[in-house]
Amino acid sequence: MNQRGKFRMARIIDGKIIANDILTEIKQAVDRCTRPPHVVFIRVAEDPASVIYVNRKQKVAHEVGIRSTALAFPADVTSTELLKAIDKLNRDPEVDGILVQAPLPTEAMQRAAFLALDPQKDVDGFHPYNVGLLAQEDGRGFVPCTPAGILELIRSTGQDFTGRHAVILGRSSIVGKPMGMLLMQRKPWGNATVTFCHSKTRNIVHYTRGADLLVVAIGQPHFVTADMVKPGATVIDVGINRVPDPQRSKGYRVVGDVDFEHVQEVVDFITPVPGGVGPMTIAMLMKNTLLAYQRHAGC
Image (cartoon, rainbow, N blue to C red; front, top):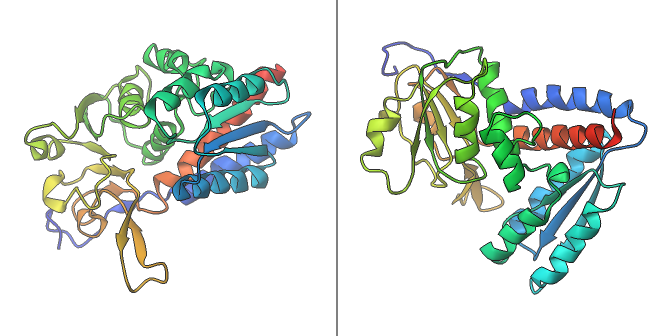
């Protein structure tokens, strides 16, 4: 029995199903293009997670008919060499989108790489120009893929969060900050009252318990427990954490930042990990790549 005294679980927001619907529409649009849209992935060093992510993105790109190229640089690449490669891609008319896979060896190199991108090819939406357009509610920019995907998940529930309390655990430039800007926009899906929480927030439970919508991107496995959420809330779990599990062939299992098993007994809607936000992030990357091509090609 859950905290509302009812024998029912939350409705699962299935990111795989929603992403597949979006990807089907993208494939149909790509089939009408005069040439395949082209996205280039830049990866530095052999970080195992980055290799997996780029491979996964390339696989989905192939499935929808988008051409993809992966450029891998050694860990000792200099910033000068990396920026020279980005400049060449910026000037290549056959390249529609460029994605720099984070993390890079240093924060300075990562900032320089993001800044060097042509904003019109910045399909990850991290260039300051695109961030500025998002802050100004100007639809000409690219929205970062994970927040854009989360927004689609929220919209799929049919709920209206106008004037309601949205709490975001995490203040990163990749998820937290752009997510807050989206939820505050003067749009049918926006108009929420947004609170940001982070590692320095005192009495964080006070905020999470008051959230009608809780977006969790804090990077700690099972950080959010059932006693931290409001009955009837909607919870979006962005976390991807590996925890030891000797019963699995790989020796670990993937869990989110939310204690899914127990939180689902309290809330109305919740995303699973895996199968929630992850598929949507890639789907929105494909959508941004198609959009970049359409703007580039003038169609």
